[in-house]
Image 1: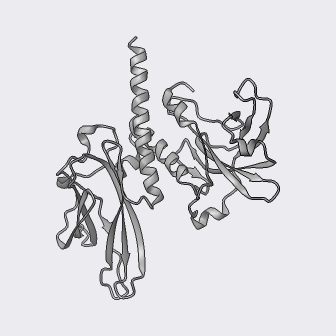
Image 2: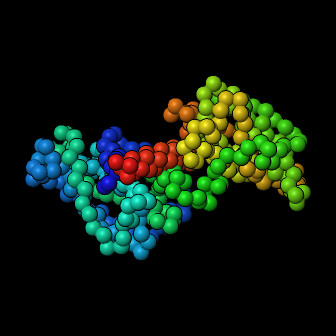
Image 3: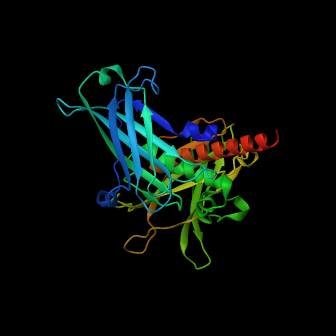
Length: 331
């Protein structure tokens, strides 16, 4: 691969048994993966691996859509008892300046960092594709791992720098003078670095919607955040629906971050209603805040928070690549 950024994005993660998140119900009926993966442990890799041994992973892509990124989970099992010992992640993304992966492409990756306790024991290697992201932005796979959602976000963030996308318009911040202003039933709550004010806003059709504005009450600029809104029946406590809202500066310009004391407004959300026509109650939870220095706040329970983190990876990486290209042309 040409740039440092892309080289970083082809990564191998080997560690303790991963804890996959529950995949959505519709993912249980996916068609078979168009990316075929075969693995073989080899003791004859003197040229590729310092110790002469490692895992050879062979890929064959048969899909019709050009492929920009993939993540594969490899389970290392004990053949004697069937127990999964560890899991390994292989992932790769293609920056926009690089050729996409075309149908019929075949390639091989070699993984040299094999734990001693595994390389000497009778083990099996089972590969499973967790996510594929295609050049048109569509996605295949159960995407059960947080790493898969971060990969999805990385590709989206790279696109923010290269072109204007619908997703970029959707997640870009709204300034107070440009967004909906709450006029009734106003609630105020401070969670960590953000003061969250919310209330009813009525649109041009007279429909009640939830308007939310968030003010940075910390001393550090904020790059972006994600919060969830749960609408529920106050009598039973049953949740009617939950929606996520993400806002982030999408061009990597520090002057446009949410500075201390400044406010962003979220796009309004339709209120859920109770059977008798009254508006449902709601609760706002802050899931992730990303500061200008790279630190974070929040429990990060939502998979979309992993996508937000990936978007910043993609934004920063694409900007770095652009600077490197510009510098090479100037030599």
